[in-house]
Amino acid sequence: MGSLDNWQTLASKFGDFGNVITIDQRNHGKSPHTDVHSIPLMVNDLKLFLDQHKLETIYLMGHSMGGKVAMQFALDFPDKIEKLVVVDIAPRKYHRGHDDVFEAIYAIDLSKIQTRKDAELAMEPLMPDYGTRQFLLKNLDRKEDGTYQWKMNLPVLHTYYEEIIQEIGSNRKFLNPTLVIKGGKSNYIKQSDEEDFLQLFPNYEIKSIPNAGHWVHAEQAELFYNEVVNFLYR
Figure 1: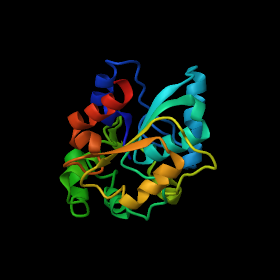
Figure 2: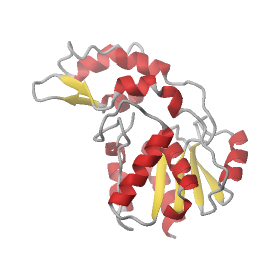
Figure 3: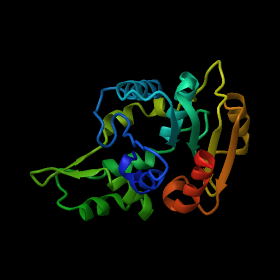
């Protein structure tokens, strides 16, 4: 449920080294809504984007769901990726972990709220963490008539949630340099996941960012930036 807006500050800084493109995946942010949602579909979306813009090779970075897409893309189209950065996600299948998030979002009756504060108050009993509420509410968009809508395709993301948490894999390996960044306080990447990374991305290294949870790039932006720059450009 993130969007390219979450990356604007860092993307601008990375732009000091070259061209940077931030992409909303389908059913998110500014990208089109569709009736289906899966990792393979998002991989194909990315391939079409690169072809349309005549991008032969790129550095690719993805966080969470985007990290899974990035990993699968690198395995499917290795010649397109010079270096890969995976942020706080592993190749394995995950257990359901966002039912509370969906419940909190569905607690907001869009037909009744008049302000963002109304939406936050409706969400707060089910989502007590302030930072998570603010992150989710970035998806709230005010229409010209003053009413609100969600930027993300909420029903489809909920329906296809199991597709998002599936494992990624391939019969071949991605041999180019790969950086895995994990939040020091996050449990999304466990020590047992390192064997999976080694099997699929043998030329990988892992860096842990202290005092950061799953949203590493937001919680420790400077440390995150330095790790990525050191890997990509130095």
